[in-house]
Image 1 (spheres, rainbow, N blue to C red):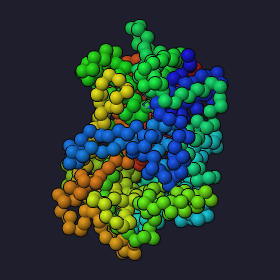
Image 2: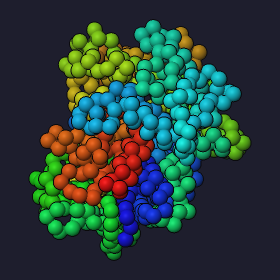
Image 3: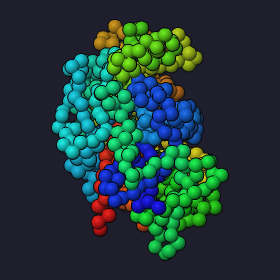
Length: 564
Ligand SMILES: Cc1cc2nc3c(=O)[nH]c(=O)nc-3n(C[C@H](O)[C@H](O)[C@H](O)COP(=O)(O)OP(=O)(O)OC[C@H]3O[C@@H](n4cnc5c(N)ncnc54)[C@H](O)[C@@H]3O)c2cc1C
């Protein structure tokens, strides 16, 4: 028996566990389905981030349902299957998006989630190291990371900025259609562009995941226990009329033996945007009709569980570039080069000490363009600091069929998607992965935004600034000019950057809400969800920084309830 059982030792779960056990009188058990984070050395090396995603032992290896608006493709969807969760396998970009997004969260009825409050929780989770002497061009605002109380989560600019990011960044600044100035994107107004702050510990250029940071500082506390390879199979409840979560059923041997653990205070679900709604549903909390299909007794009919899956989509043309532009493809295909990079890395230098993507730009679409989109008025009405598209460039690219050469993937992201998907069950067991249906590009407005943004990216890549390094557009090729041709190219290559949110939304119950503003699941006592799934409106940056914020605030809400 513990005071709290936290399901999921991922990005959010380990923050919650670490903060709660600061009080030595409080005991916490973390159940993590995946491995210990020492199982794969590549987890720690920032430049090997692409090698710990889809198809690896540290990944859940989800594949989406066929995408009806993307040529029925099924697409790999990584989620960390390891301590630290997706913070141990992601691309480490630390971005918060527009402060106005959080004010919009508050306007939905979520008192205490506006920017002026959550800004402090963002800061609380960071320990910031300013750019080093070789990164003097990086613009930053130290106030955005001020944190006198200290945090174990390291934010720095990494040891290496990809050369293609430098070119692309200059292109975004010099091209009149974009004209993005350098700013610190983490102050609440991200319009502009930046070299990315990363969750990288600058001492040895290693990944600072929630395991390497929040768990590391708490691991020796006698009041914190963590079990890995422990899949939670069900939340347990008291039978009283006042439904209360009392513990968790789990297995460490793929279901042969079912174990139970009691939580005398609360059960906290931090199993992520796919795992948390699935666990709620198999435990009897979710849409009654869906639960009935799998003979799951309905304890709380909560139609919003698993709904409103909202995600960012990345797409763009692919370019062949000159060999002086270092790419993942180069060292992935060349063992000698890879060993050379590893030697450099041991000396805290070179390609592997940075992430696969080193910059981000944020832009609004002009009002006269928005006026031609079905839901353009809603985009136009967003606060003036709220960007519509994000730009980035991935130092890697692939052509189909594979052709020799060096490729990069510049692209854009739809930051305010109207397309919504869902997570649903295939059985009454968490041993079977849930169905993930993001429904990308379902909305005509999203398609129009994508076509517009694709053209911006192309114009930047074909500008004079990029001319010294761009050889040719490898995909789709410059013959593709019409809206229909560009849309088909997008549907062919677009992929997520894995920012799933919204499936246990923090909304009013009658608006498909799953948790209230204190992250308590509606209709039951002693049960909260604290992870990216509670996000009611997707942030206009990436989702890791907001998840750390949610976890910091969630931990404070849980602590506050201890004394009430
Ligand atoms: C490849 C990749 C790249 C990304 N790049 C970026 C980026 O650069 N910047 C950014 O901001 N965001 C990025 N993201 C997104 C970001 O990492 C996530 O939004 C964030 O980490 C989600 O945190 P979470 O706590 O909600 O879930 P997770 O960190 O995924 O944690 C959930 C944990 O719960 C465990 N779990 C699930 N089900 C169960 C169960 N039944 N029993 C026990 N344990 C369970 C999982 O194994 C996992 O450890 C990326 C994600 C991926 C996958």
